[in-house]
Length: 250
Ligand code: BTN
Image 1 (cartoon, helix red, strand yellow):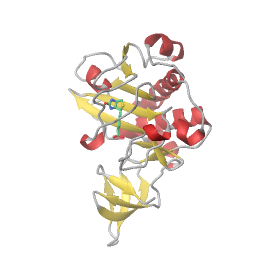
Image 2 (tube, rainbow, N blue to C red):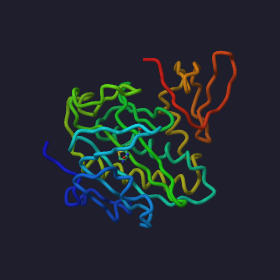
Image 3 (cartoon, helix red, strand yellow):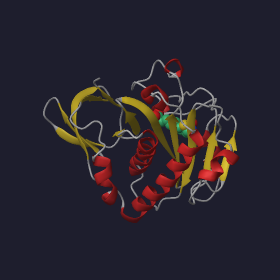
Image 4 (cartoon, helix red, strand yellow):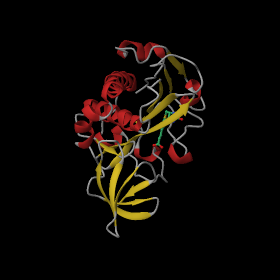
């Protein structure tokens, strides 16, 4: 499919405030860099068809073959008092819903910010803070073939195509993502995670799974109402974690 995320391809799918303005470059280092410190209004979006230095969480790289993925960053200006780590879950819920709407399948949120489809990671989220604003970067693996996915990823990757056999219009998927993110983020601005918790909890991928947290073995209990992950360590201690590298058993 010879599609692109250029403005003329995406504009017909931009239904709300998110995506205005819309910054597009056919290739760039990272869409995050186009928005960090930009001073643009909330809902400004940067998208590309290829990143030469895509950023992942925990200092990793985010690799995607050209014209295969949704690679987008969204600028948000949340209220000062809000608990910002919750924003990753807000974005993960929006990406999960967009993946579900496109594929017709159920997707899950792997705390804190991965989207899982059929036990494979199909999307990741990176939130970066600058001067009180947050740039939320979302990468969705869409049309990659099996041999185009990273071989050495901590969570086994998949794309919508490898998992369903179909190819997808990335511009339409991006429009759907922005529309959902605007609605879900609006709910979060208004009332935090309270009204979103049912939707997040219902898609909790780790619940009940054997995991390691920064190398320590444990069982994931649940995502809590404040966005933290409740775990039980093998020594029987229950605690809530705010961040960290969580790996699950396959
Ligand atoms: C992760 O799972 O490690 C987070 C990946 C986030 C990738 C997206 S792609 C668009 C935006 N630009 C980047 O450089 N990173 C994010």
